[in-house]
Image (tube, rainbow, N blue to C red; front, side, top):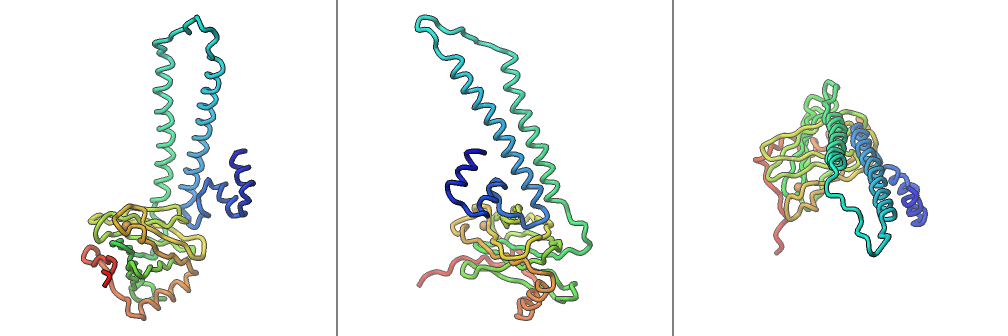
Amino acid sequence: MVAVGSAVALSGCSQATVEQWTRWGLPEAASDRAPFIGNLWSGAWIASMIIGVLVWGLIVYAIIKFRRKSHDETPKQTQYHVPMEVLYTLVPFLIIGVLFFFTVQAQNGVLAKTEAENPHQIDVIGQKWSWSFNYREAANPAVGSDAHTVGTIESIPTLYLPLNKPVRFNLQSADVIHSFWVPDFYFKLDVIPGHPNSFDVTPTKPGDFLGKCAELCGTYHAQMVFNVKVLPEAEYNAAIKELAASGQTGDLVAPSFPTTGPKKEG
Ligand SMILES: [Cu+2]
């Protein structure tokens, strides 16, 4: 901590960067599911640090305590030490067991379905090399129809989300495995062809964020980015209504949905 603290102080970091250090590098949380992953992440770092200090301490102790004292004498040789061997077989299992326990708890937390009756539903289609979003708002009286946005490699799509309202994402792929990721939500989930995935999340921070593909899916993987705009619900409804009004109504269904490669030059 001293090393981290002085590194931060010496580099003259901004307040925001210093705060990011206190989250062990995570961005500021922007969803209701963030605490599960945030706590697992911090806890794993703290546990690693404790184990690291213990191991480094034992190494330094052994180096000093067991220095060669005489040039003539061979040190005492220990071939088998059963309690020691049992210990260093059991301890890793214990570490894995503890990490496993907390990982399962965090996983159950982030994957739990919302208790809200009618969450906003957005179908996400990952396609080489962009994202398309299908807002299922036909039953929402403030919108009245479904609407969609088709992203391409040339036009980065924007995903609109309602602030503090649960959203159910249904993930489909048109081609290969992608991974839907908004880093500020502390959440990502694979988008697998022929295997729809879904998860619920409530955005808790208004503003603009960046989303990306987190699964190396091919040549233009790095360009699979999208903008995220978290708006108060009334503004969200208005944005979706505007999409519908511009003719972007109806459904997009993978895998019949075409992939969008970059345009050929010339
Ligand atoms: Cu991808």
